[in-house]
Amino acid sequence: MTAEITVIPGDGIGQEVTPAAVAVLEALDIDFVFHEADAGDHVHAETGEALPDETYELAASTDATLFGAAGETAADVILPLREAVDSFVNVRPATAYPGVDALRPETDLVFLRENTEGVYSGHEDRLSEDLSTLTRVVTTSASERLAEFACDFVEDGDYDGFHVAHKANVMRETDGRFRDAVLAVADERGVETEEVLMDAFATHVCLDPTQFDVVVCPNLAGDVLSDLAAGLVGGLGMLPSANLGPERGLFEPVHGSAPDIAGQGIANPAATIISAAMLLEYLGHDAEGEAVRAAVEGVLEDGPRTPDLGGDASTDDVTEAILERLD
Ligand code: NAI
Ligand code: MG
Image 1 (cartoon, protein in one colour):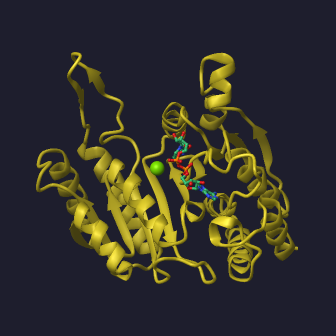
Image 2 (image 1 turned 90 degrees about the vertical axis):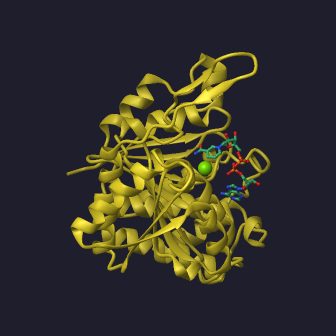
């Protein structure tokens, strides 16, 4: 069956790295139908809303969505898009590839981030001139759903087990619920787990990232700690992600619209192209996903490289080099 893919470049470098990833998908011998859709700051400036209904509907009905980045409207775009695909987990691998001048070249871990609740559940209030509050939502059901996914992930990937990062020593009720639910599922499934306090994790992962393979975390912690890990593996241009739901997925680089380099044609397309490889694998095109990964890894090792990785190549140069390896 022909898979339908929604493509949302968004703002800034999203407009540069998304076409690069689409060019890679188009170069494969797979009959995808692409639906280009709009979202982000530039749409908001024109129409007053950052995420048009048509874009939401496409993401909610096609098999997979490839998203670039949004700017200031990111929360208004990406949170509803994740909801559109009913995504309960954000898979964020942080891998230091050979040839990349990484702070910690031995890093190879993957975050499984809770994707629906925590402090990103949208319950914020301004109670007075002086006081704003946020309600943190944690449910046993969402935590268990994440834990079931984590157990499958560990079993399928032949990992020894997973770490669960939390701060249940302070947030006893919410992170306590998260931790207890995750550990109970893992225990029932016979999957080994180790707890780590999320602040301590930040130190440990910098000092010795080899201690970690799979890290299960609440929403905000996953967001922050994965950016930290990006710093260990060569920067934000290197981190892909997959937001997975029961029937569809949304694939996006972890980085934002990078206004400091947008329009210069020098954004690193690796994060988005590896996200496209995750999309391929999600849709069952494992061989093609593997070929794309190998092409990206080859170019990271031999060059050309974009300036964030110490080179002077453009996004197009790197994309061309990846396409040549796919030939
Ligand atoms: P950012 O990820 O856009 O950029 C942070 C730094 O990393 C910048 O110096 C940028 O040049 C560099 N960088 C990021 N991706 C790169 C790539 N592919 N190649 C080379 N260098 C790269 O984060 P920042 O600056 O905090 O936010 C900029 C805008 O992006 C904000 O408006 C923010 O709201 C939005 N944002 C959107 C996200 C999304 O759409 N998922 C995620 C994070 C931020
Ligand atoms: Mg982030």
